[in-house]
Length: 155
Image (cartoon, rainbow, N blue to C red; front, side):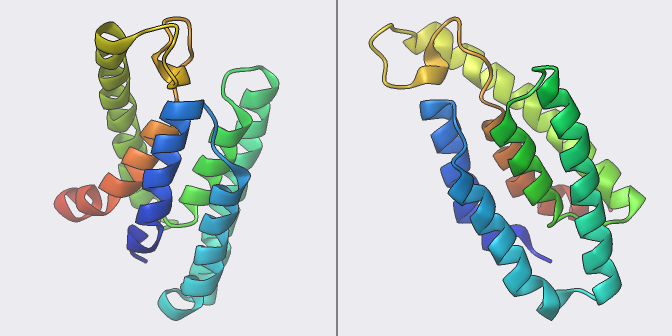
């Protein structure tokens, strides 16, 4: 199922996390609603169940990571919601893992460059503060936007 339906939501997610260091719950819910509305037209019942199971597994692992303050709650929810749009096969999940890893590296380089160039205590972009964490929503969104192309090129 094409991630095209979620592209606008992913762009807003990246912008929100870079600006406010927060992924709004309504964005995550909107992704789930899009999946629920579109999946029956593109996927078999078995594939829907498998994708929900994979997303649930990502959510459970993410909750553990959140408990240990490794990752933020919004990032966990957003990544789990995005997994609904990744085919449930091992190869596709591996391709997504590769895409997400590459998006993390590119996102970190991008943010470090922005922080060096534009860091200011008066900035309205919380992620540009020197002591700010990394806005993971940027990498989640980049991975979601790039995954279809990567899946086609590699797979």
